[in-house]
Image (cartoon, rainbow over all chains, first blue to last red; front, side, top):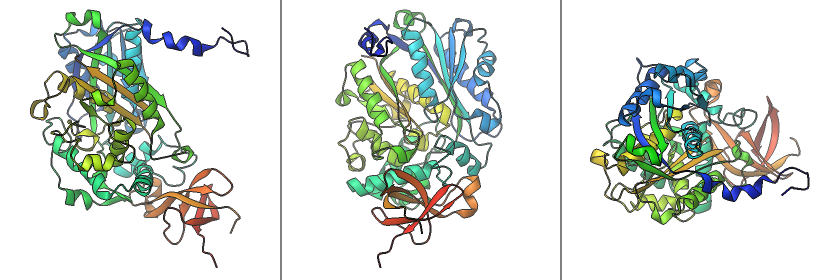
Length: 406
Length: 73
């Protein structure tokens, strides 16, 4: 079929796309602890996560057919570019395609999406996908500046915006439209710190009270220090294979049931409604459809709580809570580890830490730990279907992944 | 004062700024819905504004529109 312009009409081919894909499984995971490590460089972190992952998947580097690396700002943070082969060769992976993916804080979620497609399409069999960021070698104002480059530098950033200020403006509008309160934001931080305190790899392993979370140092009104995720160093990696080869590597394969990536405006002031993220809605609708499940079937999730308000809006955009009610839903305890749908049992970006390029793959690792019943003290009883949501910038990129053992 | 006026869609006060803006903090930012159409991120000069306040552009500083609350006489 041809369109008026004479070009092939690509839209007619889309419905068949999924049917030619083959099932893909996660066969290995590996992570470094997250934290501030003055004596570690970017490559050593990525290599540690990659080695642990290959060991976990009982695979030698020579079996890897392709390497994808999620990294947001290695060139700005540590002055190193050409990062994918820089890391892959240090892992003993030679000759195969090695590709860096950058999508702000969704860099490694996007790397995972592209790795998945590589395996599902049959282009590759065994794919290693890692994410890494080394942030703490720079002072906070410089880190804030490097992160801000994920916004619109010709507009909002030139005016003096930071990412905290963009999410503060989102929070302010959400409060105005729906009556969301400061206490609701604080409830997200209290819950995620309670979870992170049980995670041996978390950056900040301490519980906080609601009073503490309400009274943090102001960062961008109405957000305070306890509403903001951490500046961390760290890396994470996962190993993918086609389902038909899983038994060669593991007796606990985890299936990728649904996955989608979506995009939206980079500048916050271009969005018609800043209290919702269309990219999250679009990606999740597609991932749910692919997995053949709905929000009610998702037992637990790792959500992108870069700021407390982001977790509240994610609950709404993913269909876990009605629109405008993500705050009360959290304050009522539904997202606690003991609640009906535990969110961020790892501690989330808030307590586990947020080495931005590592976050998307780390979310996948944390889902897999729960799905394999290897989450230790923070293990939850219902753990056969989980969802990860990885957000870039103020919502310009979103990757939603649904994993399961069912 | 220019003719550009609008309404505050959302706002924040920045306390922890990027390296370049640290000497100016704290300062107020807002997304302003312009009466002429569209929205723009700008700085607020003078009194603090809230959502739905009416503002007017008072200057453009280094390419950044700066607004102040519009007082009706």
